Image (cartoon, rainbow, N blue to C red; front, side, top):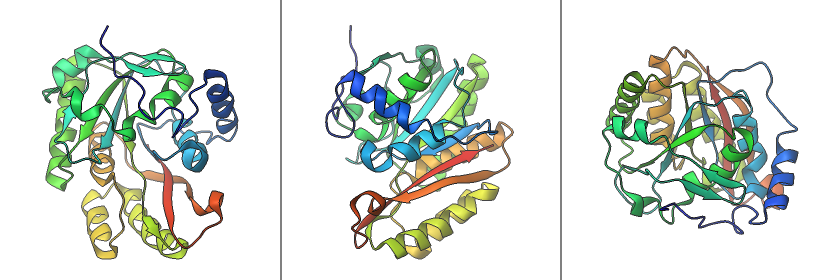
Length: 262
């Protein structure tokens, strides 16, 4: 059977199933109760740096969710937007793809663009652990302009209407890269504040104004636009951390945020 094999197991997250399961169990002990998110922003760094923040985001989706998770990640290698239609391997087992949704999505299937990209893969073990009955639609986003985000959101909405699926949308993104901690927090929180009202154009403007290097701003915006059409009205920052919290090197940090859209 064709599948997308793990490419960063043993680097970004443990390859040994029991070790991975124990780590995720620890991460999910810290939760964000009382929120049922339509969409989330989850980081995609190594679990030692951002795993607890990612779990915080995923904890706002009920653990018995068994619908379809639309997982949008940025392409770090310059590929164009494409969807994967094959199952995804994780150390905890296979994550199945909702192929009917993929067929309804009207986006080109491009398995090659997903092969060595970590932005979606890092989400998959968390999904398998937290939502064992859910299926996924992995979408790699190339063009991250606001216009492209709006088009992708419309594709997601049309496919949701065609299939009648219960969906949640996961935007995979880290925030500022390799800047001093003080600068990362200032510019990231300023940009994230625009998402309180799901104002994606203002989000783009603030990123441009500050030069903040969020890598998944397109997926974040596509998620927010689609969720707004599905009834969401606000974004809530649940947790913000940086790599400096782990390394204690605050001169060159990467920012991570858990955001729920409800």
